[in-house]
Length: 426
Image (cartoon, rainbow, N blue to C red; front, side, top):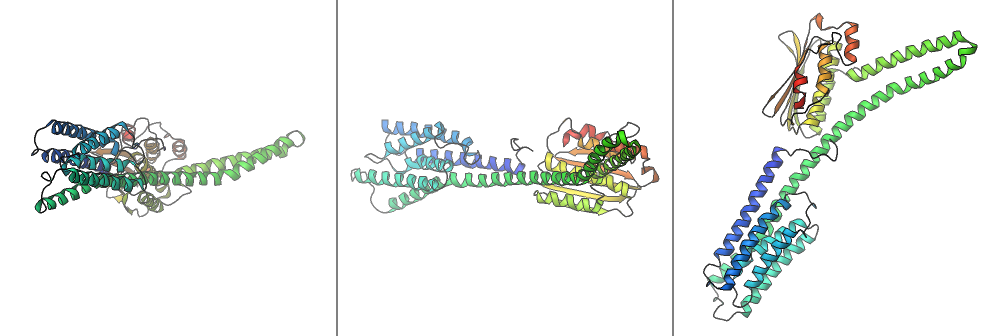
C-alpha cells in the first residue's frame, strides 16, 4: 500500500465513528432541549423569542460541526465557517441572556458545547486555554447578570443556589464531553494508522529479504560473466581456442545463475516449509494479526515443500496487502486422501480485485505437481486451499519443472482455475 492510498476503514473504526457521531449528536440535542426547557417558565417576550431562535440556530451549527470532528487530528481548522457560526450564535444567546434581568444559567449550554468543539480543533495547551476560557466567560457572565439584576429577580439563598451549582457543574461537563468523545476516536485512528504502517513494514521487510537474497546470488555471477566476456573478446583474434573455453565457462556460469534465480524465486534457498510457516505466522503477528499455525507433514518431499513454501508466502502477503484482517490461520497437514493440504484463512477480506497475478502464478506451480488451488469467500472470510498429492505423479519431469519456473505448466493448462476467478478477492 502506498502512503497516498486511503485504506478502507476496519469494522472497529467504522463502529467507533458511528458511536462518536451518536454521542455528539445526543449531546447537542440534549443541550438544545435543556436550554429551551429552562427558558419556558420565563415570560414570552421578544428577548425570549430571539433567544429561542439563536438556540435553534446553534443546535443546527453544532450538528454541522460533527463531520469536522471525525477527521484526523489537525485536518479541520478552528476557524472553519461552521465553527465560527456555532460560536457566534451560541455566544450571542449567552450574551443576550446576561443583561438584567438575568435570564438564567440554562442559556449557556450550547456556548459550553461550542467551547468544547473549539477545544477539539486546537492543539497543545490551547485546549486547556479554550476550556478554561469558556467556563470563565460563563461564570463571569452569570455573576454579572446576577449582580446587575434587581433584587426581586434574584432568587433567595437556599435550594435555588444548589440548583445553580448543579447547572454550573453540568455546563462544565458539557464543555468536556466533545473533547472526551473526539479523543477516544483519535486514539482509534492512531491505532489504525499504526496497524497499517506495521503491515506495510512487514511487506517491505519481506521484499527487502528477497532482494537481498537475489543480490547476493546474482552479484558474483554477473561480475564473473562480465570479466570472462571481456577476456574472451581480447583472446578471440590471437588465441581463439582459449577464447572458446572462456565462452564455454560463461555459458556454464549463466546456467548456474539461472538455476540460482529459480531457487530464490521458488523456495528462498530451499528454506524448509516448517520454517516458512513459522516465518509467515511471525510476520502476521507483527502486523497485529492473531495467527494460529499448525503443521504436520511427515515425509514431505523437498520439491513439494518448495511449492508449499511459495504458497505460504503468497497467502501471507495477500493477507497483509489485500485485507484488514485481525485473525488468520495457517494449517499444513497430510490428509487421509493421500495428499498434502495447506489451508490459509483470514477475516476482513478486502474488496474483489481484477488483474492479480499472485495466485495465478501459484496455480501454475501447483499444477506442475498435479495439485490444485481453490479459493472461497464466505461473508468476509477468505480461504485458500492448496492440495498436492503424495503419489509419484506429483513428481514433475524436467520439462514440467522448467515450464513451471517460467510461470506456465508444460501442457499449457492451469489446473486450479479458481484463483483466476477469485484472484479479485485478494
